[in-house]
Amino acid sequence: MSSSLVEVLKLLGNPTRLQIMEWLRSPEESFAEYAPVADREEYGVCVTHLAAKTGLAQSTISIHMNSLERAGLVESTRIGKWTHYRRVGTQVDELVEQLQHRLI
Image (cartoon, rainbow, N blue to C red; front, side, top):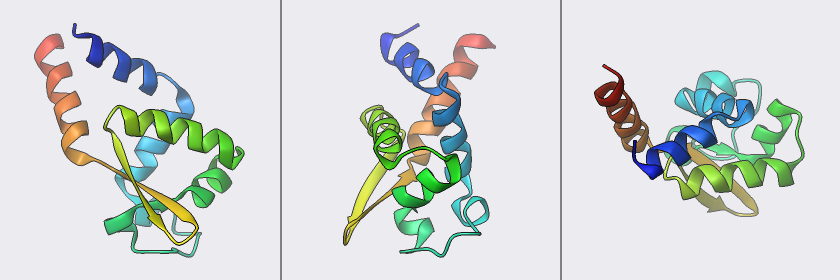
């Protein structure tokens, strides 16, 4: 197994990061209770909303999101004073493909 795949699996082994990735799959539905700061499909979800939904401090969420961004699973966009994160579908698809190839 390649080291990059192992590193990504370690990242997703964290329940908070895995939950965030699940929420980011359908941001409109997952964050419907929060008024969007910007278009969620285009820019993703504000870190403030991620913190509120998880119940964690913004600084903790930022650490989780930075890890996911370094792995290429999410990308960030700064809008005003808010940072938004959205899932990078192609990277997630490649991860699933690698897992299927190695496990099936």
